Length: 120
Image 1 (cartoon, rainbow, N blue to C red):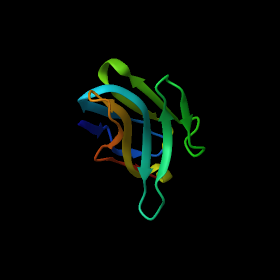
Image 2: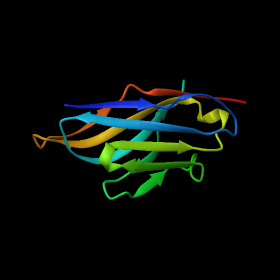
Image 3: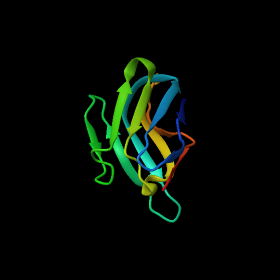
C-alpha cells in the first residue's frame, strides 16, 4: 500500500507565502502524476495544480502565476509553493498521488489534508 502525508499548512496573512509538502511512502514502484486539490467550506472541490510523471505542470486559473508545483523524485515528495496568498485560498489542501505499487497495481491515494487559512 501507499501512504500519503501532507504538511506545511497554517495561518498566514494575505500576501504571504506557504509551502506545502506531500510525501508518499510504502510499496511504491513509481509515482505517476500528483494533484493538489483544495476544498473550502460550502464550495466544490478544486484541482489547483497537477504535475505529471515527466514534470509537466498545469494550474487552475485561480492560482496561475501565484502557485508552483514541483517534485523531488528521489524523496517521493511533491511541493506546492503558494505565494501572494489571498483569503479565498483558504481551504483544506489535499494531495492525490497516482502511483504504481511494487505489485504493479495502479491506483490513486489521498492524504489527510492540511488546513491553509489566509487572513485579510
